[in-house]
Length: 192
Ligand code: 5GP
Image 1 (cartoon, rainbow, N blue to C red):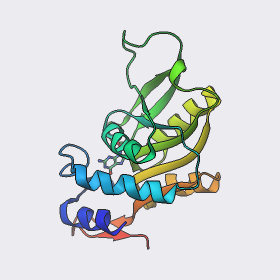
Image 2 (image 1 turned 90 degrees about the horizontal axis):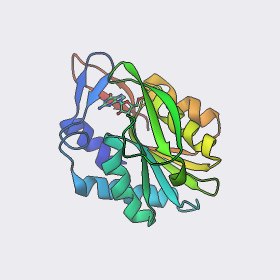
Image 3 (image 1 turned 30 degrees about the vertical axis):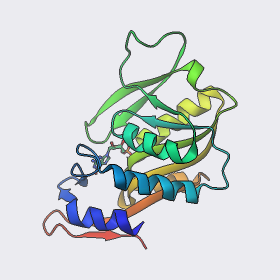
């Protein structure tokens, strides 16, 4: 998606350790109009899929998922990173290694919000090694739900998580795929 690539070039900051900071428009300050265009593009890319729910993970996925959900006309469920007293009833849980925090989190979803009939679109801001997505896929599998597709804003292609998921047969649509980036020069190469 040209619009997102241009915005990454304009406002993205390449950090050491393979980290791309996009907190000017995606991760801290949020450009809602850009998110709306991203939602419209995913709706076009997944027009053939029967999706009844979007699944994401807190925190950065939630805003993106909610705007996308307006294009699909479906609710959003987000996996929570901590056990809170606010979750009633049975839960599904899995462990996710966080690329940005460098540690493991238990994430959970109330069982009543993910059910065997659900046909899910999984949405997230970044795809690096695929740990967050593997956790969400695990929750979907535990629920007996079907993953119809995966929608990602920025995939870091050089970390391989996306290619592994494509090899497993998932329909994965990343709106920008960064194939290389250089913290010294700030240059960013996209997959065409
Ligand atoms: P993965 O689980 O695929 O290794 O990493 C994806 C998760 O880590 C995303 O949910 C995202 O929040 C975070 N993440 C991974 N790489 C980056 C990055 O370069 N920049 C930012 N802002 N977040 C990242």
